[in-house]
Length: 129
Image (tube, rainbow, N blue to C red; front, side, top):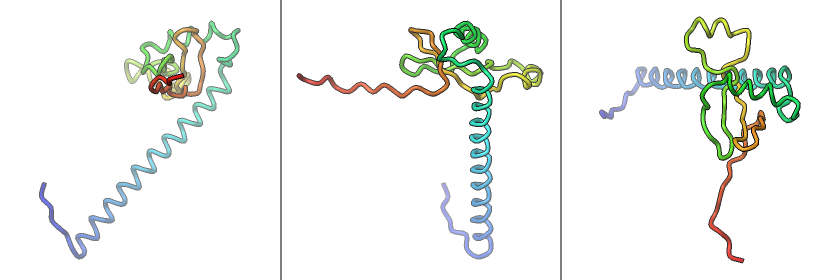
């Protein structure tokens, strides 16, 4: 890597350009995070409560519709609500439906779903009694 110092007007231009690029990236990321939170709240209000045992059939169908799991968090599996589209035309068709960045979590043993990400289980060394 070549290291050199640009002074004067050119150095000021580069610093401003770096700052503007960083600000644009931060604004895009913060907007994405805010919109994702708003979509999650919208889906939480619209869909049946996952804590209610009467809605277990709906959440089993949502789990099947989601396709492959995103990741495993301890006893929980993370799924994307509505699954991932195979093509851009499917994405346009499904746009009126569920959103792609709203996740739900299913307990592997009990099959119960929840909206909030589960707390990580940390196992320390065994304690002597």
